[in-house]
Amino acid sequence: MHLNKGKTLAQCLHDRTAYAMNPDKTNDREFISAYECDPRTAENEFLLSKREYQMLTGRRQKNDVIAYQIRQSFKPGEVTPEEANQIGYELADRFLKGEYPFVVCTHTDKAHIHNHIIFSSTDLDCKHKFRNFFNSSFAIRKLSDLICTEHRLSVIENPAGRSKPYNQWQGKETPLSHREQIRLAIDDALAKHPSSFENLLSMLAAAGCEIKKRKNPSIRMAGHDRFARFDTLGPGYSVEDLQAIIAGKKKVPQRKNKRADKKRINLIVDIQAKMQQGKGPGYERWAKSFNLKQMAETVLYLQEHELLDYSELAKKTDASSAAFNTLSKQIKSTEKRMAELAVLRKHIINYVKTKDVFVGYRKAGYSKKYLAEHEKDILLHKAAKKFFDETKVQKLPTVKTIDAEYAELLAKKKETYSDYQKARAEMRELLTVKANVDRILGVGKDEAAEKDAPSETRS
Image (cartoon, rainbow, N blue to C red; front, side, top):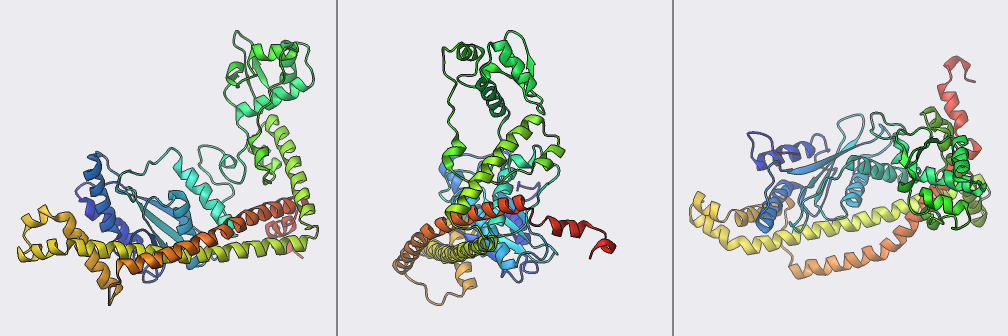
């Protein structure tokens, strides 16, 4: 969100937040949640944090970003407004890692429930600005898909108009890079004990690789546009290294398999669908090998956990998801109260610190000169008074009382979070295992075929 021509920073922030928090769209603001800010005063808090940043760092950007917005939509009829708001909060929390204040507004005025997530461009310490990295939208979408999968909601399987294939950034496993595929092909060829480097190149060509023979030979796998020189493939894969390996002077390079170290079960690949997208034979060979490994890991998991009955697997997966969602709601409830206490504490401190300045402002007849000299303190005082009026706080608690309750909630959150992490890991593993079993057994194919069939052919 950039500064609009002819408008002040405050006006732009108000316009953006007012639309997101529209009472007609959020059921009279029922479906609004926030982190480290109060929705009613968020625009002022964002504005103050930006001014604080400029004062602390002395930096001013020409094309300054005033805030960022994420829009997250859900399939009609699949989610309640409460759950949508919870998922939006979790997305912002996990993406921003608790470093930036944000507001989540869930709109219910359309057939599809959707979230408007607005977060400040300045962090909580007012010392850093959010760095919008390249392809951040892909990272957000991947995280959103992961969270929706955890909540048993559907995601878009084949989105259009992306700059790179969806399978490279969606799901549990990122496919191998071009160079990694080349290294695997070379490893397979070396395992057949070629008699010379020329013989090795012939084996690679027979396996579907294209070779450019020149002073610095290069190679590419089928389905890829660019060639890669052997001396760019990493240690052990240069022409000299490969010639030494073939001559028996060096050992075959032992590359550390990071994925194997994780010992995670991953979703098996729909090879047929990927081949229809134009994947080459090199990808097909890798995918078949990958699928066999994941099937073996899946079967081993079922045996170790005595889940050889499909109904038991489905029951345990549902129970695991329910347990995770329960713990997630507990943590979110605790975090919500902690955020409320943090906002209340901040306003109480600001109110007390700026009280004398505001009294002076009133005695000065609300002088513009006095306002210009003490603008920050006066804005903080007004924001605090507005907060107390809107929340109808009868008696302000002491900061000591707030700190005591906050410490108690923090201890409770830490205690619950350990169980939450275990439940999340177990749920992800079970969801992956069940998805693999469903694909192996073809579960759901008959129902899908029946839906696609003409009505007169259905039984």
